[in-house]
Length: 449
Ligand code: ZN
Image (cartoon, rainbow, N blue to C red; front, side, top):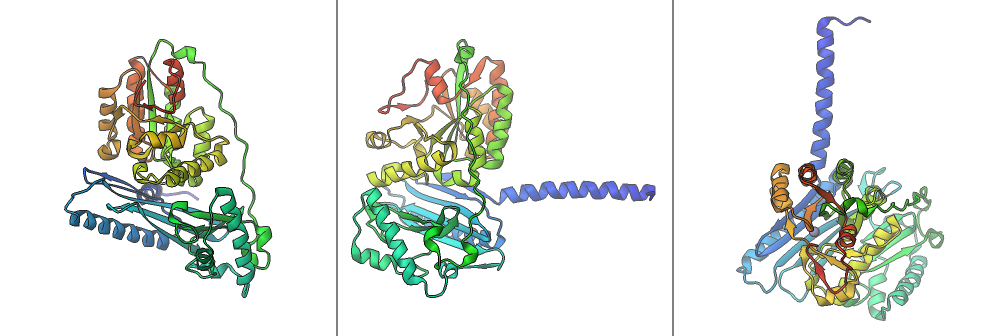
């Protein structure tokens, strides 16, 4: 078939329109994730919502987030802005997919001057095939409640034993009754049925959340058969990174670039690609709540010789938490990271840089803050971010950035290009400490080297 000249032009135009369409779609899609940081002298708001593949679910969650934000700001306004500690709103989401189910857990914390953070848990579970939300009872074979209750108690007491929790019988009795309300927060994965009981449902507030995983072997005649089968095991081998020969950096000025609040598959991957050009290794302070949904890129970052540190699970102000909650924030993150890279982090960057001696003691990690704050989350412009880095760059600096934003990643790469010409090398925190002859100490807070 031969195309006429007009035909050819139409065809080329059609192709161009398609390409533009795809680009726009990808952009639009990306922009729907919400990574919001608002910080002023009265409050910090941090929203971290990753959209799911279900539009209706996304709308539902976005509306919830908007309402929470408005409520929170109204409370701040009402307070007359007289506060003992900065008010704080944190919303994180975590989505799990298993077979035809998409479960999104929305976890909200707010601190508005009470004795502690207020916590709200909501999980929406969507059945993709049936195109509708399901409740917990939708998973169960009819009349299997008694069977299930026994299994739940077995795993609950096992959990209590491991964590040293003494349950109250009346609280357990009420909190484990098989109702959709009690079992609002659940998801399935290859390990079985996971049930989260928020603080105070089955244990005291101080004991924190209780999460049990019931393996499929125990769920025979309880779960509907379509939810029973395991999917393929995706666990893969981890390649231990090779250590760099630090002699190469002996006569260089050194900078440690650090990236908080990730990982985030698209932007973190771009960063990993980009830093290769400058022989750079960087340090990631990741959020436990995000690592499960960005496993591959975290594994890649580690295997390529970058350092993985902890930024806690939910990004709460640790100064406002009880000891047991501080430990929970840190140990849950350790576990999540260890599941993916086979080792727990040695470094901790406390959210907002907030730390005291008690937190240091409880964490047993090296506390790494920063001496160059790029304010990248506020600037949102690669050139301004680059300029900010260049202006403040000096030997031994620790630079704070966030790899969840495209502009931050690009700004960092632009800065590396310039700094390399000025004789800088880019190293991880551990490499920096070694090169500077510093033996890290749990009792200190490091801002630079
Ligand atoms: Zn952070």
